[in-house]
Image 1 (tube, one colour):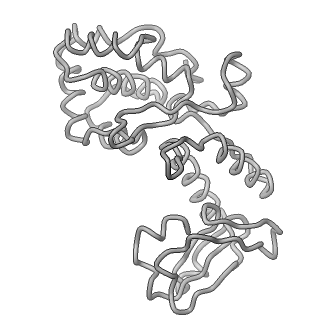
Image 2 (tube, helix red, strand yellow):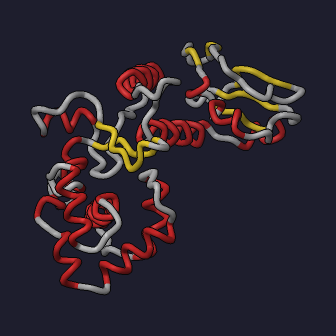
Image 3 (cartoon, rainbow, N blue to C red):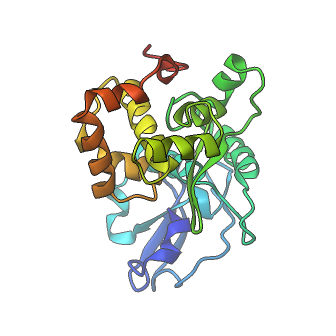
Length: 255
C-alpha cells in the first residue's frame, strides 16, 4: 500500500506507478522513484471516478505493472484495511480514530462497489451482523490493550473482548493469573484468545498457532512466548479445563 512506503526505501530509486485498487489503472507515475515520504496523496482515478488516498492506492514497481491484476489489488487493499483497523488507528496524541476510519473506508468501499465491511478479527462477524445480534453494541469495535506503554493491542467486538477476559474486570483476571501461576492477565487472555480462535477456524488448539496469533492479533508477546503458554496448557488437562467454558463458542458461525 502507498501508505506503507514511508517505512521502506524499496521504491526510492525505482520507477514506480501508483495503481487504483479497483480497476488497476495508473493514477500516478514516478520515473525517478517515490519520494522518501508521501504524506499526502489525493488523485482521482480517471476510470472509476473515485478519489484515491494513501490508504487506498497501491505502489508497484513499474517493471511489473502488467503482471498485477485488479482482483489482487482489491484483495491487498481490503486486507490492509482490516489489519490497520484491527491494530487500532490513533492520532499523534494517541487518541483512537477507528470510528472515523471505519466510516471513511466503508464509504470508499461503497464508491468502488465493494461489499467490504469492517469485521471483528476473532469472531469474523461484520459490523452490520454485530448490530443485528447485539443490541447494545455501537457501530465500531473496541480497542483491547495488550500493553499501554508501548500502546499495542487489537480491535475486537465487545462480545469477544469480554469473552477473552472471562467476562470479568481486569483486576479480577490479574488476581486469577497470579493464583494460577501466570505472569499477568495478558497470559490468561491470550490463552482464551487462542481457544476461541481454534473454535472459529474449526481446528484443535495447537502450539503451531503461535505465529499466526501474534501476527493477527498484534500480541505483545513473541511467538516463542505464546508457544510456551500453549504448551503449558496443552500438557496439563486440569489447567486446560480452567480456561474452557461455553462462552468461548458464543457468536461463532460454525457453532
